[in-house]
Every structure is written in structure tokens, then in C-alpha cells.
Amino acid sequence: MKRLFVAFLILLVSSLALATPSTFAEEPPVKYGIALDVGGVGDNSYNDAVMSTVFKFKKKYQIPDSYVRAVITDGTYLDRLTRLRFFAKSGYSMIIAVGADYNRAISKVANEYPDLTFAIVNSNGVAQLNVSCLTFNESQAAFLAGIAAGSTTKSGYVGFVGTPATVDAYPLFTQGVLFANPKVKASALIFDGNKSDATQFLSNPDISNSASPKLIDVLYSTWSTDSEILDAVKSANSKSRKVWLITETPDQYFSLLPSEKRNILATVNKRVDLAVNDVLELGRNRESILDIVSEVNGTYGRMYSVTNSGLSLKFLNPVTSATQAAISRGITAIKQGKVSTQG
Image (cartoon, rainbow, N blue to C red; front, side):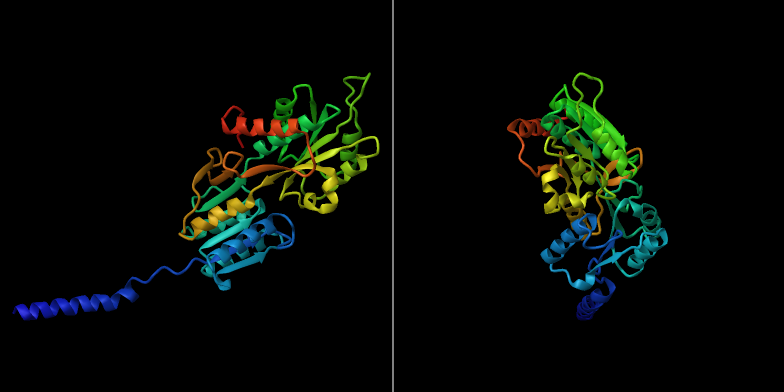
């Protein structure tokens, strides 16, 4: 009887061993789908910044080509929706969309496929737990730009060019200007693409002191649709006047063209590479970034800022040691919580 029992145990263990591969199959490798914005690779902006990071990640982990795919949208809502659903239906468990114009489409598809992991770059507008919103602290960017402008200006008059979507950054720009130099005056232009408005803004003197009117000589712009602001700055420059522009990258791709360096004082760099790499690394384990980005919007992901090295300021032309020192003081003040720059 004892021998029969032992034989039964051996048979049972052998049966379980044979059944394990099919019964407890390993989870398939993660497939990465990248939904690019209009323009695709070669835009020198967000698409390129995202794909450059994806290529490095792919090489690091020796991921086969068949497990990484990028598609380009034609810009319509229906096409964006179709691209994202294609990934979801084709076994891509980590899906990244580039740009806030994907908000509505990714929200819908993420709701349809709650077991998949999604991320959206440069957006804070999708309130779902399986969507990581990767966004940047525009307030800190404006504050740093304000310090650069306020410490560099010779006329004592600087300007901010924004859109209805970025106008909230103006108070922080002004705060940075005053942080650097309390005597400097700032003014704002809400831009809609009319080049003549930008030209007039740069040629309009500060008439508060009629005895010695001043013109803007440092301009910070968040306008990224085209190079109209840069063109206006170039037109304003002459032998008797130097006007500097401060930009954001990768938003304003044209600011990195070698031919434009002489017109650009500095650029606030949004570390898209850091953000995308973070979400790719977590995506390997089918996880999302679940920091609270906005309690008001109910969004999760990560806000990249000076504090977590997600924002930096790079000077493209020489500046004084006083300007460098002012920037360092500003960064320290942000990190120590002495300056309120909530995004």
C-alpha cells in the first residue's frame, strides 16, 4: 500500500510539472506603440525628442524592431482615435501619444482598454489611472526666463509674448524679472499670429518716462506655431539696437537652428527625454507613473520641474557673471520652496 501511495505522488508531481508551461504561461513581452503628432520624425520638436529617447531605450534593452512601432496622425480626431485603437487591438501594452491634441482620443481608448498602459507627452488633460500625463512646470520656466531677462536688459524694459493658453505664465515671468532686478519693467502681448502686432510691440516705447522712452530689448516667447516672433526680433535688431529672444525647447524648434543663435539669448529646455524614459522604464513592468499632477483636474503622471531636473535654462550666447549668479539664486530659491511657482 505504501509503495502504491509513493508511486501516486510521483505521478502527481510529474503531471503538474508537465502542465506548468501551458497552464502558467509567462506574460508576453511588452510591445511599445508611439502615436506621433502631425509632422512625424524630422520635426525637430516633440516627435523627435520622444523618438530619440525611444531609440536609446530600444538599444539599451535590445528590443526587437517588431516590438516598437511609431505611427503618424493626419491631425484629425478620427485618425488619432484610429491610430490608438490599432495599437490597443494589436497587442501593444505600452502606448505613448505625443501632444495634448491626443487628449480626447487617448481618454476614450484608455477607457476602452483599462488593462493597458498609456502615456501622453506635454499634457495635463487626461484624468484616468492608466494614463500617465507627462507635463512641464510652465510657471517655473517663465520664472527662469524672467530672471534671465531682468538681469540682462540694458533698457530696463522687457516683454512677454504668450497665447490665451499660456497667459497664466506672465505673472511668474514678472516675478522672475523683479527677482533679478526690481527696477525693470515688464509688459505682455497676447499673440494670435499677427506679425504686425509683434513688430508694434517691440517698437512701442515705454512712455511712462517721456523724457527718456525705452524699448524692449529682451523678449520671452511661448508662441511655438511658427517663427513670427523670431522674425519680429530679427527685424527690430539694428546697428544701434540689440534685441534678445528667450525661447522654449523643444516647442520652438527653430530656436536651435545654428543660423538663429545670434538672436537667441537662452532657451528653457523641457526634458522630454527624461519624462519619456521614466514612463518607458515603468512600462516594462506594465506600470504607470501615478504622481498627482493636478488635484483640480484629477490627473496622474508627473510634473517635470527644476526640482526634479525636468527643466533647465541654457544660454546660447555669453552673459555676465551677475546673470549666471541670478539664475543660480533663482534655482536655489525654487528648490528651497522660497518662491511659489506652482504649475
